[in-house]
Length: 389
Image 1 (cartoon, rainbow, N blue to C red):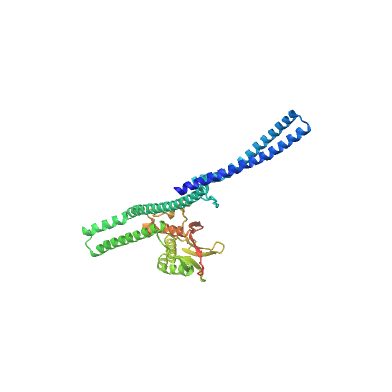
Image 2: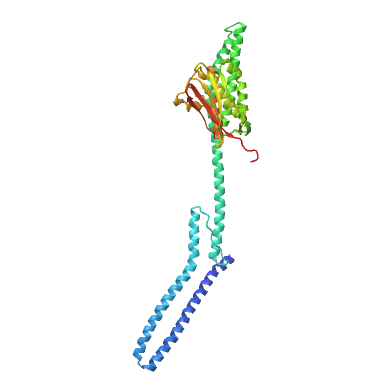
């Protein structure tokens, strides 16, 4: 308290001494002028001895002196007030900026120890603390928003999963229930019929298991809960491997695949998920291919774009085109152009939604394009990522 009082007195002392100096300066000027006036009067009286004329001269001189004193006092007062108000105006400007959450400007501290200087120090300290506090609050608020968003996504994912499962499992559950009741009621007593019923139940149970697992994986991809193991790999070799795995299906459907690439093309992604995309595209192409110009065929192509550093993989199959209005909708989960199409073909209806989720994670392009005599599905990959960077 005593320290604060001493500081408060310091500026008043400074002001007092400043005014004393100013008054002393004015008195000094008055004394000089007074001597000058007396000398002039004395000379006037010696020369003219005319008191009236001397009085007139004295009056003029006093008027001039008064005018000079008034102007000088005004200038001196203006200078003194400016010296004391400038830091106050600066502090007010800083305070206004702080009220708008702008803490960039700070008061320039000098070596003087007075309350204005100390007020500037206090405002600087307060500005720094407020800035740190607000920044911390902003960070905490951002984390809170992210946490709320994460919880919201998890809740949305849970609701979507329950909705999808409850919708898609109705048919297999109904089939299992029907055939199980047939076995219990011994509708067909022969061993062959019972084996058929049991196989249907087993097949539908396997479909349910596969569907639930795929749905869980799709949810993780769509809501960013899946981490990718990105690495450099040969997309040509991976494509050949997928085609080899589909050989039996190709022979059963009498479909011929054209893929004529020998040199390695290195891409950077998670090879496991890219294999799933290729498998999905190729199996769909086999299922829905139709004979055109006397041939059922699939063309697999890989194109490089060195400018964009992208690899474009496309799978074309002869067959029917998809209505333009459907081309964007087919990427939704369980969307069926033909309501019986997926069950008849043995699919779960989420293959293209799976492709969409993977590509969205990589922020790469994908799609389907109608072509003469068929349709082409494509996706893009990033080129090889340098190992030494």
